[in-house]
Amino acid sequence: RQMCIRDSAGGYQHMFKRAKLDLPKDVLQGFEGKYINENDESDSFTITIGNEGLIATTAQGQVTHLLAKTENRFYHPGVFVDFYLGHGKAEVETFFGKNNYLKQ
Image (cartoon, rainbow, N blue to C red; front, top):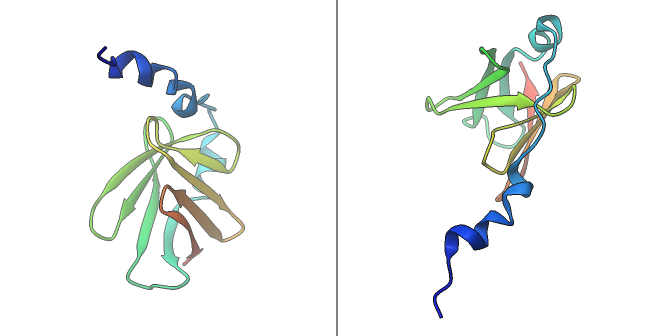
């Protein structure tokens, strides 16, 4: 019997589907800036405001569009990545673990 990957994976879609919260521009502006990894200064990203939320751009130029799920937690649809932003710092969680960043 063959397993249908498409149907089997469909049950996990709820893990990646999240509500999108629209935040006021003044709230989003508070997150703008450059964030540098506490343990590795070569690891950094810059947060800017995009059309639907925030944009995180790494020092290497990788762009990640972020949608708000709460007032200070953001995600990228379909990918396990969470950004917690606030109080001059950021915590980024992926499948590989968590990293802490300080806002410059």
